[in-house]
Image 1 (spheres, helix red, strand yellow):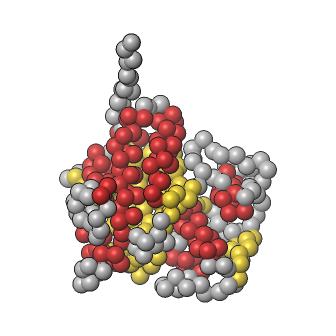
Image 2: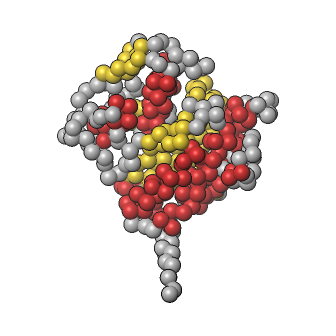
Image 3: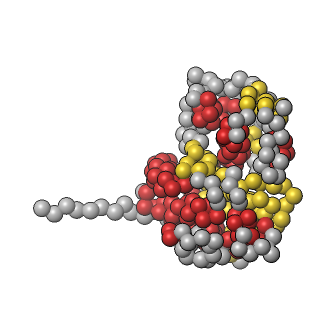
Length: 296
């Protein structure tokens, strides 16, 4: 079965592709797939993680996958195949890059599959990288790191999946960093509806961002979570948060009167949890590095 990638692969244009591969029960529509990359002209971090989840699920279910693509065009920095290759996307799945000239770009971290119970190690590495790019101390990024720790704790709380995809890209000219995290677990609404069966997917996401709300007793997540994420990213940093889980979408941005939150049901189905977190780099307060003195 041949499935064409969308021309632009982002959170708004992913549904057709997902629906061509899986039904809403996450059952495969075929056993043999050809992913045709030739229409692809642009891909966002969200597209990178979603595509990673899809390929990972196909491998897990024993499906056969091959790809059709144009060779990476090294003369065009906007070439999506070159971008994916430089992000180590293909190396993650076939243990090699498509092009021997491929190398990690200064504005991205490589695509990673992160075990949620080991996410702290990854975040420590990611914050060290970002601090270097922004000429900041790691202490300056403490709130950002804490937010992402709570994201992983919250996903553990609401999902049966133990591994997710994460991709980080820095946009220096726009003074922002985009973080995409996604998995193909049961999704936040499903776990909430197990204890509150009367709520729909959009209402479930609104519950999930209430301070202290949890469906389990994960000790690290008591009293914090998605509310903590929104407070720090949207109110303090002036960034934005986008959450799509099952048929629910929640968006939070910074407005004139503070944080603006919208939640809605959508026909498009995301089989798990998808987050797009955007940090502004020009609103991060510089914090001096802490020094300790050894006294003999």
